[in-house]
Structure formats: structure tokens, C-alpha cells
Length: 260
Image (cartoon, rainbow, N blue to C red; front, side, top):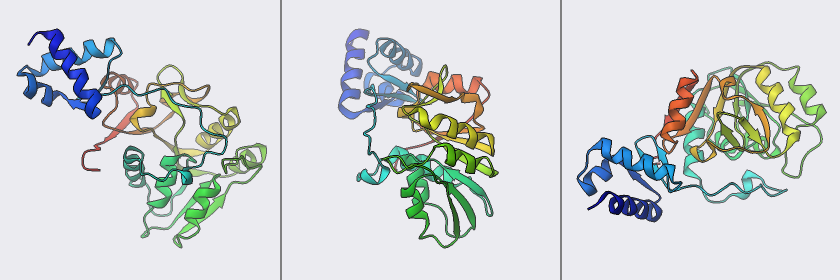
């Protein structure tokens, strides 16, 4: 099989299954690992796939601006990549911690999976997450109030005033997108200042970004990648993006989605 035929077939397989591993390319086409990776680099440069740690995935469509009333509760199907990142994040919580949990879907999954054998205090500006947490007797909840958005979040002047008077051990943050040049970014400018204050008052800032959010930009920048002490993502992350993150000196933990 000629190189062009092999690469065309690789794209066809990825579009059919969503992903392919370097080891699978070696097996299918009887080529070396270096040859397989070279094929993936060429195909990525043409915009036909996205390389990951150990393989490649289909190119993700551009993100759609979220609906005005979007809320994690509305999403009925389980998104395994978000859930895997959330469960790994929970492992970083220790007894007596005071933490902030992001309002995003990954934060909602965190709230649902918090351990019952430790006592912690959770700050949240999401009424949906607060509703989950109020049923957990080992958790004290500080609901950060203010004018509520139609998504059930508060992040106005009054919310920021509350956060400025609280010190946290850890803040678990997530935004619409994360890129090396623009950092963490969101659609709604109202959340920018709130996010900055949370991170300023936290002893450790942990970014929770499923790979589909990586390498993309939204509209308003909240922080730099280097402002995070740790990033947690899944193993569909672009190989190049992973290398660049590590070159910045930012710790990154990768969750394997196999079997999730």
C-alpha cells in the first residue's frame, strides 16, 4: 500500500470509530511506530485529525455558544471524559479542606462524587451544585450569592465581595476553552473578575479541562495556563499540546478513558 493510500485509510478509520492508536496503525499496515506517528503528523497538518497521546482522534467541531438557560442538570447522558476528569479531581481533596467547585459540568460531576468519609467545606456559586451538596451531611456549603443568571450562577459584585473575604485550600476551575496563547477563556465577561478573585484567594488552583476544551479559544480570557498549579485532562489530548504544557513547567495529569 502506498503512503497516500495508507493515510487515506487511516482518516477513514478515525472518522468511523472516532480514534486510532499508533499501535493499531502498526498492526493494520505493518509499519514502524515512527512511520505511524509521521503519518499522523502529516494528516494533522492537513486538518484531517487531531493527534493525541499515543494516537489520534477525529477533528472536533467548533464549540457552540451555550444556551442562555444552560445548566449541567439539563444534560441527561453521561459524558465520560468530563466524569473521568471530575473523579480524578476528587482524589485531591483532603479532610478539612475548604474548596471551590466550578459551575461547569465537570464541577457538577465532582459534587455528585465527593467522598463521604471526610469533612470539608465547599464554596459554590451554582444553585444546582448547592442542591446536590445540601444532601451530603459531611459537607458544609457556603453558597456565594448575588444576582443569579438564568443558568443558575452568581458572579456579580456581591458574589465577588464574598469571595474576597474567604481563603480556600484548593479551587477546582474549568472554563469554556484553554489555549497556550490566550489561557483559560469564557463566553460571558461577567465571570472573568469572579474567576480571578477565586484563584487569587486559593492556595492551589487546579484546572479541569477535558481534552475537547484544549487548544481552543473563547472570547474573554480569565487567566494564563501558567496560573494553574495542576491541570487534569484525558488521554485524547493533542500530543503537541501536551508537550507544550510540560515545557511551561505546569504539572498535568492525564486520565485514561479506556474502560470508563
